[in-house]
Length: 283
Image 1 (tube, one colour):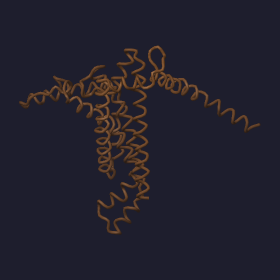
Image 2: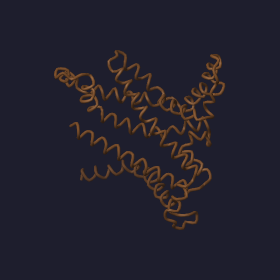
Image 3: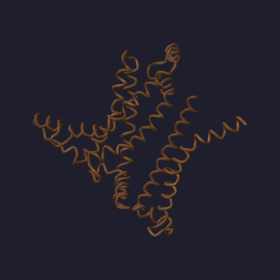
Image 4: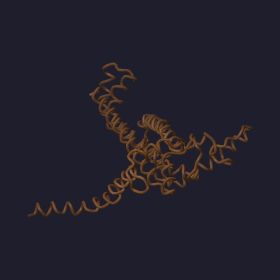
């Protein structure tokens, strides 16, 4: 009787999560798929909505910018945070520095945007410096430089968190392995490749996943800086989806959400397979 009561109590504690997942995930996802394959009247149109969205100029621009931002920001984020972790791992006060680096993660987006807008605005600190140096000012927020600004904001906000993850990953690598490599005559590059890289891969994979997720969250900063219709170089898929929601175009919104979900799933699956293949080679 006790075991039966325990089993029933488990479902009682799971009930809030089940209700929440059903209400805010499964039902909306099902409705999104329904809208993706039907027209405004509810008639089945199969892939017509997908053809309409994929041929849309705004969607093509948003998809191109989103893929370009991921392809640029994620490698920069991983490489810079890893190099910083390697640099700081042997410092005495590395914990204090880690806290300083992770602070941007907890600062509200509005404060971060205000800070960077103060730097990159037409009359901001950077242009004021350029003017005083006798150089031409740059309209950072109204040209293709907007992409660079957003990349800098993304790195500023996310490098610290990844730095902490890499430092934790480096700290659990047994020091004996480095000692054995030194005794065997391995040089610095060989030790880095066959010891550090092998054991840091699980952490790097986690950082890769987090970087992809955070690359989509940069929409908040872009929206606060530029509004719903930013410069063409930083017009992302989230802008396209947000504008379709405002226009109550559920078909285009659902198709874009479905395509984005499938794209993320393929990217994550590829990363899993890549990690497994790399681990199998070196284990």
